[in-house]
Image 1: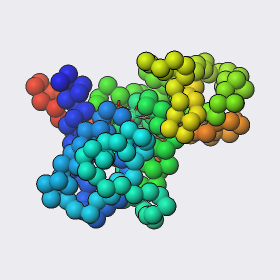
Image 2: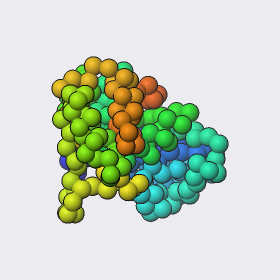
Image 3: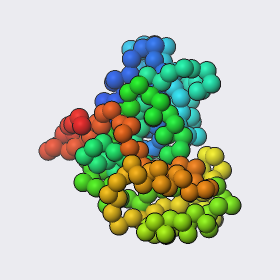
Image 4: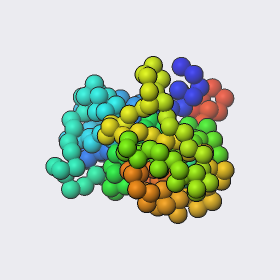
Length: 232
Ligand code: 5RP
């Protein structure tokens, strides 16, 4: 395992350890959350916790939950989410995030924002002083609106590019059947305002700015030959 994978594993485990019996858990997307899902499943199998139900944020999370034996439910069947665990692509000092590296930010935002406690799991490479410094901002768009949305984003000063598939001809298609535009902004000075402005462009479904949603960030860090977990 690389040091980064080790950080992801330990931080995922630390988040899974916070899941209590009789709870509804939002299951995030990505390689870090995958470890959390694995360890929630292991704790259930060991009888350490009981009566836990997951709500997946993506096809990937649903597949992993099934693989690790976590019973699933939906937002139509429950009236609360006790805890949600999810990764991030960037975390700023105010615990605001850029998400959507896995093109799952639309369902992630619905579930993470509903949770009584939203825990973000990252390795320390994800910490930034300002959002947008290392990662392009993902924007999910309905397919027929891609061209006008790109033009509107350019007017806002962003440089948009359509996300293309890897080992798949053509663009990435989201779990909702939409496309993703990744946007380079020179500086995101007001994430709350940009989040609203982008979502107000006709044809935009959701963007990857998560502002004021995070309760706790667990950060994995390598120190010597150990991984330590810091809280933010
Ligand atoms: C998916 C996400 C992921 O949580 C984010 O990309 C982080 O992924 P990873 O843990 O693999 O680095 O937002 O849409």
